Image (cartoon, rainbow, N blue to C red; front, side):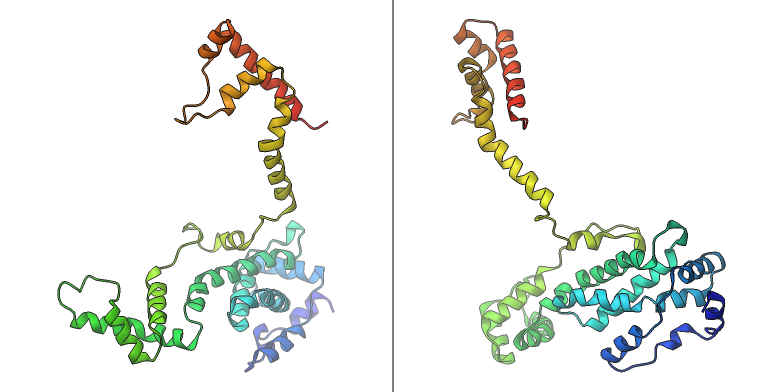
Length: 306
């Protein structure tokens, strides 16, 4: 079926193809039955949206990629957030990707949209992570919904000297524990959680929808192979590498380098100065500097792999 015929059969709102369903499994089953677009269809629909603002074309592009959002959302189930919410946020990213997609770049929409979908899901997780983790057990949930109001009530009964106090006294902790039928240490822990505040994982910008930062902060590249190799190289240079390079020097050059660069006295003043070394060897300070420069060049040459 060519694109003209396909457009003709979607005169109605394309979102009506997704029925109103009451559970996630039915939704997933429905989006997996949505027809995929060929590269030609995708390009023509994207051009229609870009050049003519065709909402029907945008709808078809979104519908054909809903299964991608479902697939990506499964990667984030371990954060304790409902998959339905993850899919909803991913769909927002998909619609942003469709809006900005340029068919002339030679990239399929699936590759372009993947970054937008993940960015929206990441932002949602970062915004809701503390809310999810702050109250997980039954006792914690009870404290989460009652601690603030009980604390406010106690402040109302407090004296003027206590109104500016933020922490709970042992008597107040014991009272709350009895009232809510929880342990005293659970009251203290929840108080610390609620009063701790959130720490931003990224700088706040005015870029709005154009910011991609969350994906960078969720990634952990500490075990990336090139970084591991670089770290091992730095460790070797700081230890065995320096010893290997020093062995390539004559006795005088080695002592000058050690005194000038490698020795730290108890008073953190470092080793000997050029003039002190010059007086010891009976030469000028400039001659000591020349020997030092030549020795450093020789050491660098010794550290270069064969």
